[in-house]
Amino acid sequence: MFFGFRRHVRIFLTIVFGLFSVQLQANDGYETFTNLKEALEHASSFSSSNVRILDLSRQKFAVFPKEIWELKKLVILNVNTNQLDALPEKIGRLKGLQMLDLSHNRLTTLPSEIGQLHNLTELYLQYNRIKTLPEEIARLQNLRKLTLYENPIPPQELDKIRKLLPNCEIRF
Image: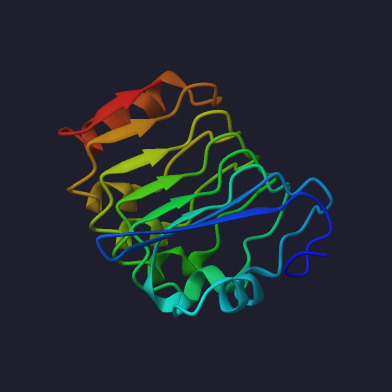
């Protein structure tokens, strides 16, 4: 057993010029990942509040770990290739987020709180079930890259998104 996980969890903690990164990979034994806080507390002597990069890809969880919302300095959040069907409204708490990868999940929509991520420059949504984006997406004035391919978005919705984000490279 390693930090409460039973199988092949590798945790990489990297400190480069004061930047903390936590990466958890290959957690094949669980469908819901709920032990992030304990892993962060025991992994090293640093405070989890300093985590800037969090990679939780391929964890097979269906619900966001509640500990994510405590990471106020988070800049990069990668939760691709999981079983997420909803993005919680609490996403709006991560004000410093610059890159958010939600690709390869089961998302059908995004909450309006996505518009509170004013520092977001990259948003990856490919391979989901999204048909529309909230109007609040227009508040993401710093967004430079948005990937939407392999989503059932109708052409008129794509036109609307282009108008809402005129300075963003949109891939669909």
